[in-house]
Length: 393
Image: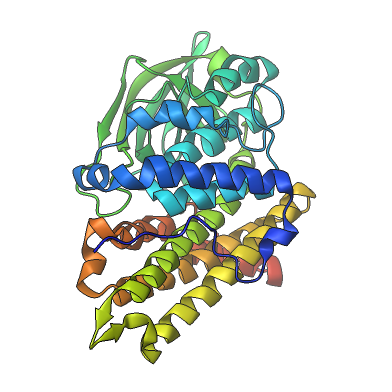
């Protein structure tokens, strides 16, 4: 049984009327790319835990890297369009979306927000063409959610800096050309950012195996032993954890869109399956319990779309707060996790087979639920904003 999902976006509340023609055009191009290039092949890569490198040039042709960044060869998308890109790529495959998100949002975003003009001119144009791939090293083996207390150190050495420490779960790091590394300055005790170039002596990145989520994404465990970084590669405007947090705030909204994409895919797959699959002499879609599940899924998808749209509008207006970004991430990921579970239920045993695509989204949402701040951390960020009281140090 082959499930053919529609190429028409799920839009029960006619959200198309609320976005510009240009943003819709971006969405349609990305959706067509996923339908034609990603979805037909990704299952095998996901199962083998390999990344489809041959798709990078085709992705580059879409001109998406750099997202909302203006200039430097970047597309200068609206926050709405940039979020929709995350949603549609996730609808195709979560690993592929994260590959772009790491380079475009985290790595390029850090250079744009925290780099000098010279650093922006050096790195961003080639990254916008995906000729240069980036990675983002913040999380550590013993430091996850408490990112302000990272243990990697930076010590002055002549005209440069020596980095020592470890990073974990760093997407793209085994093949990236430049890796953003956050480290504690031993002189000031503040968090600084550094650009470590591929092939730097003392830098070792090993593939993390045994994953059940985002299997086509290559994550690495990084070990740094006296990695010498020239002063020219120290990010000039990354001088405290507040600078790190600003980068994360400006990418967290994209993870909310990403969750919406997984939920959209689950709904599309489940609806088509219910229409085609027959049990007891009639399609599953005619059973009340199946319709109930689909309606719950649709309700969650629609609220996610509306929340993400409004959050992106606030970001474009320059008024998005950290709490607003965290609420969208927390809420959308929790609801998407529920949606993909209902979708897997509707497909029954076929729901765990890669050929039906639901299994990827079901498993990948476990990673999305956890990264860019766990559900609990984002909950406390919102709680702090609405009460004025911090429930964590």
